[in-house]
Image (cartoon, helix red, strand yellow):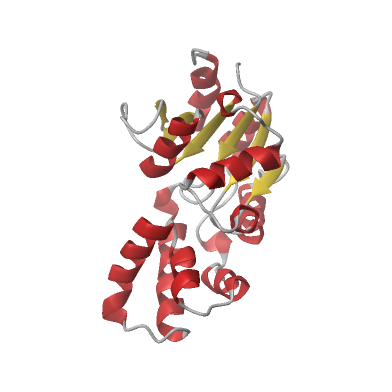
Amino acid sequence: MNFTTIFFDLDETLYPPSSRLWDAIKERIQLFMHERLDIPWKDIPRLRRAYFEQYGTTLRGLEANYAINKDDYLAYVHNLVLTDYIGPDLELRAVLERLPVRKFVFTNADAAHASRVLHVLQVDGCFDGIVDVHMMQPYCKPQPDAFLQALRIAGEDDPHHCALVDDLPGTTRAARALGFFSILFGTPGSSPDADATLNHWRDLPVLLDGRKP
């Protein structure tokens, strides 16, 4: 294996979209925008799309346009009973334990949410660290500076030694442009936005071993 570090996205990557957890988080984001900021319901979908396109996340867009407390926002949108949506993933744990490299969660959420998710999945002992929205400040994926921050935090000076697994094409595309080996998770067939695609965790070690340096 030619890698020394692998970065894993969190939401809808380490757990499947079918869990509906991310859908519940999105509902909490919309509720925050309506209840805390008095944004009319009809305007929220448009604003979220605009913020995602311009800033990378709804949070960054709200920070740029409203006086919000980031910690309050993150606590509010992640205030969910995780076990209602996800549970232990023994296959994921077995794969992570087989990978002879350093592993980091790389997420636009915060470390508190990431830690809770990892604990419920029973993979919290499999990672060397979490690169979260606070550590990336003022950037977020897929902004190039966010990847550079992640490399610095992981102690890596060459992205060609790193792989990234994410479910969003914009993120894998940005990572590949910087030199990461980018893997688009949950997409069948090949993709122009990534170096490889992955649908089952059991296939990850073979995929990484087969990568050409």
